[in-house]
Length: 389
Image 1 (cartoon, helix red, strand yellow):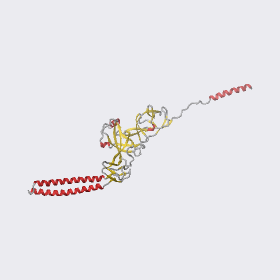
Image 2 (tube, rainbow, N blue to C red):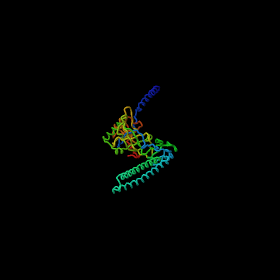
Image 3 (cartoon, one colour):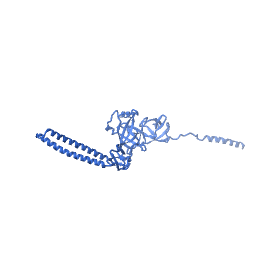
Image 4 (cartoon, rainbow, N blue to C red):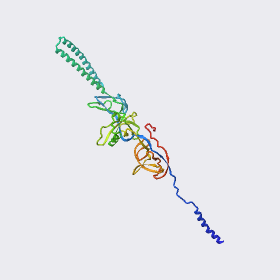
């Protein structure tokens, strides 16, 4: 009995060893490849452009001054109001100037009466001279009086013109549609006393100029794109420009090139350029700081576009992640172009048209790692009217 019991205790460890030997071995099982979104680059015709900075400048800016002396009798506008061309803004005392006009009119009438008399006398003496009744001296005297009377009429008509002009100066009119500043002189003050007194300022806001400077390198690049073609003034006015204010997305204001300086400023190495923009709502006012979208050529070229958000950068420069034919993530170095509406970036070099670009930004795509690509498309950027093409 004791031997059987001993045999049983010896058998238990052997059974435990045999059971443990039957358990499956623990091995590391890698996770399945991540599923990520990829898309081939969007191909679209893009005109090359550059974004520069500029300032809005009034189309016209005029100081309104008193050109004749007198007391200011009326101010016929509201400070800061929009006025139309020809609207009366200021009135200067007119009594004396109306009297001067009447005096000049009387002088003209008197001179014309004397001219009628002188011409009649001249005609009579001319007839008598032909009939040998009058002398040559008498004829010459009549002719001189007629010529003097004609000159006197012209002199008095000139005086009338001056008097009428001075009377017109007593009413200060708006020279164009625009906004008038606050008045600088009050009713009852003497103006034009020996000098031209500034009364206010009028600013024309529609259309609006935008001025900016281009570097010499930009000018040379544009010339290269144009193949040394020289544009005349009419062709320049057809080159579109777009601007955006600092608080606006994109470039919502559309205009055209208006002027290019004929010379480069040697001190700055830049050339002055001006655009003209319609401003019916007066959203633009002089002095605004704006971003200017300037085309660098007349013809558009096919470009590869990707969402700007998928671009990454390290010390070596900018790069994109792409998935190769074996579904392995690779890193490709690229150079970029302009940023388009819709957040799309032009890729100038480093990317092929059939590359599958990684669109996922959740760190699941690692260079060298295998993935399951899910092909999608990149939406086209919106046009100026908000649609897509």
